[in-house]
Length: 270
Image (tube, rainbow, N blue to C red; front, side, top):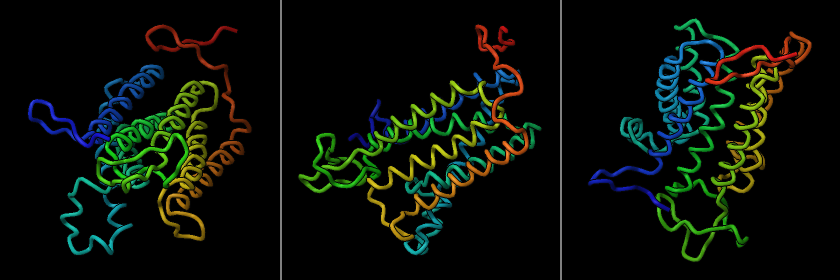
């Protein structure tokens, strides 16, 4: 594990590096899609800035709420601390800020949701590489299987001789493939459908992976993340059911577009 990289005397946290790569990937994806649907490409920078600020605020606030009994003695210090960022809080905060931006730009649309449907699992996959490399404690339970590994460097260390399941890598592969599949389907379903698929798929992935992580249960056998995942799955199902009732089908009303060179769209050949 590698907590930080030193370049010419500058100390760079590896998690921060992958956090930045996450947003660079988001920028490239959003810019490509904006070009395809005929919107200003420069909006990608604005969307990413809103998502970055909202994600940081949401992740921090969610952590404070979850761990209030531990941090209440120094709330101000913990608010501005660089550690303790929670994915679901970041997701909620990013959504709120991006929706505020979209209202400002008059772009509150299903197209925006579909861009998020691909960007969120892509960013999650990249972020989990940062978790793995920095050894921030997001690994799984102790195990003796051949692919288990020790975490002897980083924020949270495994005891000497103990190996743990590298669950961040499992999530990177799973969510990376999921993002690719959603991207390939972007013109084959009615606008907005991908977001419903994302909610269901991401919820299922996180619910399953929690069985191999070290988080304690909060409701019956379920961890807090599994409770959040169930809510996410239900929201995704409700979202798709509403779309089905409204449109009668999740397929687009017209044939998918075929993308010409440069990312522009044109009607598909009959």
